[in-house]
Image (cartoon, rainbow, N blue to C red):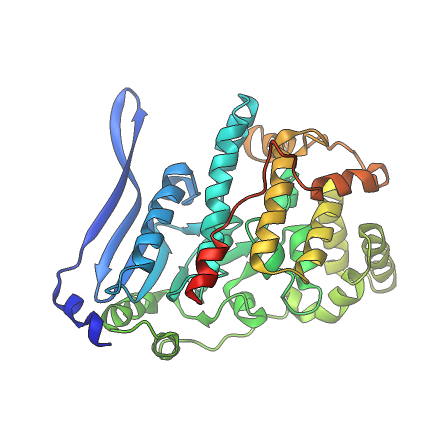
Length: 396
C-alpha cells in the first residue's frame, strides 16, 4: 500500500496516557494505555494488570482519543489491541461504579458508560481493521471492545463470559447484539447464566475468528508489524498462517447444543426453568442440574430483563442495541425499580458473602411493568445516548 510505505522507515513509537494515584503517601505514575507503533499498525496495550485491565474513565477516554485520531490518519492501516498480564480485559470497573452510585455521583457513572458504549460502537463500525489478542480473561466490557471488531484471536488461556446477571445487571455495551447472533439459543444461555467459554469454544461458536497457542503470539505480532496494508483479507491471511485447529472437549456446553436449544428456546424464564427441570428429571444430566443452580442464584429481575434484551437484539442493529442498553443501564444505576446492581456487587465483589438479597426476591414477584420500565425511553431530562452514526454513514 503506497501511502503507508513511509511509515516503514520509522522507529517504533510509544505513546502513554498517564494518570496519578497515591499509594502509602507516595505518588505513582500509572499509564493505563500504552501504544506501540510498528509498521503501519498501532498496538494498544491495556495496562492495568492489577485490576485485570478493567475499563475506567482515563482508559476509555484515551482509547476514544486514539481510535478517532487513527481513523483519520492515512499512515495507520490497522489496530492491534491486547492486555497486559493475565487478562485481556475483565470489563468495566464495577467497584468504582458502585462507589460512585453510593456517593450519589450518577452523572459520573453516566459519563463513563457513555464513553464505554461509544467506544464499543466505534470499534464495531471502525473504518480500519482491528485485531484483538484475547489472551486471558475477556469479560463484559472486554468483550464489548473486541467482539465487534474485525479479528479476534483466542488462545488456550482465554476465558470469555458475560457475567452481568451475577451482580444484578444485564449484558451491555453491545452484548445483546453479538450474543443474539450466536448459533441457536446459546446467546440466551450465556446471558442468563454468565457461564464461561474457553478459547476453543469461542472459536467453535464464532466469537473468535482465529485460535492460536500463546507461544505463537509473538510471531503473530511480529508478522503483523511487517504488514503494509489496511486490507482485511491480507491481515486475515497472515493470521491464518499461525492458526491452530481446535475442537471443544466432551464436557463443553457446545456438545449439548441440542438440549440447550430445546430448553432455552422458550418465551419466558419460567418456561426455560420448567424445561430444564423436566430434562433433569428425565436424564439426570449434570449440565441441566448445574444450569438450574446458576439460574436460581442470580437476580430474578436481571434474568427477565436480559432474556428480553437478547430477544430484541436479534432484530436490531448494533447502534440500536447499544442505545437501548444505555437506557437499561441508567435504570440499574438510578435504582428506581431495584437496587440489585449495588447489592450484587456488594455480595460478590466487596463482602464476598455470595448471599445477595435480591429485590424482587423471586421470578413470581417480577412484574411485566418492572421489565417494561427497564426498556422505556428516557425522559427529556435523560436523553438517549448519542452515537456518531451519521458521521459514519457519511463515510460509507
